[in-house]
Length: 279
Image (cartoon, rainbow, N blue to C red; front, top):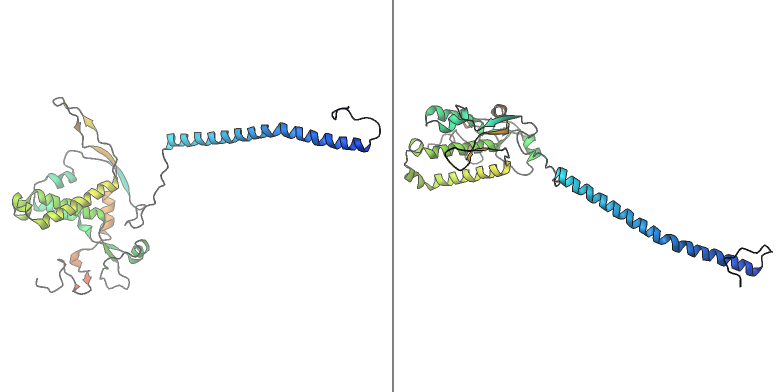
């Protein structure tokens, strides 16, 4: 019996030969399909594996070079001036000598030192134009400045000046006899004052944690002591204080200007009491 894989006969095809030819084509198709399907599956699996391997290598390389991805937060528009407006300088802080900051801390209490502190926090009361304030602060409101205009400025205090105020208060705490005519024991009994100091301590702690200064402070060996001694010197990126102080002075007012008016008590004097009040 001739095999269906035998050469075709060279006589005229009969009906049975047509059936044989059709059968041959079908049989050949099945054989080829069975041959290339496993190879195709294997190729797809290898390609997928290589793609996943490449992605894994890229991911590991990115972590090694750039570290984990953290989206960069935009500068808060509610800061005034806007962070993008501020000017910065790289400076060395913690230096010994007669620096003006060291004088403010270590100098003995005197009217001259007090005047220097008051000058430092002079721009405590800041005016923010209404359009600027309302565009960035949402529904949060603040006291308005009573300057007689149709859309008066808002009254705020920049956090840096609140912190300076707290530091000045701590300086007073170190010399209770001079600033409050009290002994240490008497000062410790003043619950209202201690409450204010705790408020200031909390505020300063939050600011330190918020800003997270990562400038490095070094250590050195003391030939007479086994423990390393810390150095206070550090190179830091700081806001240009001269620029910021000038900027806030241009946007501030004094209580002596009498620009605050209570909705019930009316305009207030420099001691924040109603004008004409004898209390």
